[in-house]
Image (cartoon, rainbow, N blue to C red; front, side, top):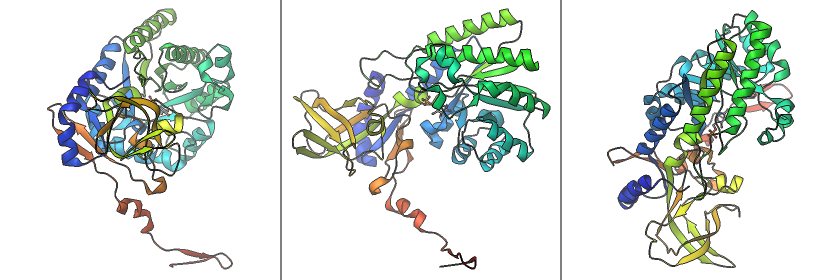
Length: 430
Ligand SMILES: *Cc1c(COP(=O)(O)O)cnc(C)c1O
């Protein structure tokens, strides 16, 4: 879906002056829209204990994280820099959940130091925790549903056997029993079946699979699972024809399911956690670019002043991002490829898209860049990442990250020289 009409209107009002003040390109985020989505979450899950842990990788910007923390969200992290960002936004202890995979001992130590809720992704990772010797009271285990879930008809799991995430269900009881012996008293379970789901069904399937494991753990170990983390992956409609994800419907269905489970089993229902990124901020961002070149070859090309370093989803996944031309209302329509400057033919924001005719200097706005956009950007070809702006509730526009400059690109060339002579093992400067 294009950005909301309300955001489009707010953006229109500031576009020209923001471009003049800050220059293009920029990602701009809509504080109002983000607040509205936070409210939607709270309303959808008002009748069951829940918490959303925003997936930091979606929008790792301190100002943005502080807004979300202010709305009571926790943070889902999977690396040390993400942990630092969460802590910087004021998150402490179980405000942070650490859902990493192929995790190193150093990363675990960093998460333990913050008191984060650790999501154990494998038996090998649990072994590392044991070696560190600071077993937390509370642990969450990421469950790999394996073939059983695929057999149960969860086709969106794809090839469950090749999934690298999680403790296989066949080893879950064994590893939880070890945790219990080592003093863990509070248990949670986590599962994430995928990303960008547009229906509630995968999440209800996840809940069922986790409740099934909770039953097993109670029967075999006497363990009460206190929370279930249904992962991220709530989709947003990138295409204009897609209906939005039914968050209110998911809230109702999850609440009903838990209420009946509670009645059936006579134990308190687990709290529900999410670690959604895209759904929270994705629709509330746009990438504002200007046309650098109009080029005419076998196709018509619109070259803009941003590229894959700012947003690589179209090139990487063939993802659709809606594009508008703010001054294009009365222009004739052309079919064009919208391209960046990378020496890669897939550096295209859109292929064969019908857009109002543009000329050099015109604005071209690429929608839904509030998550997994700047954060996925890379520096291949010496292409630098653009700045981030925030459209505040009062209509003011604030820079929340500067654009990368050449000094950033060259920063890692400022280093301690080091030379190893392997035959005698000596190490020296230069
Ligand atoms: C990427 C990821 C998320 C967030 O995914 P969204 O599609 O942005 O909701 C959450 N949890 C884990 C473990 C992830 O890898």
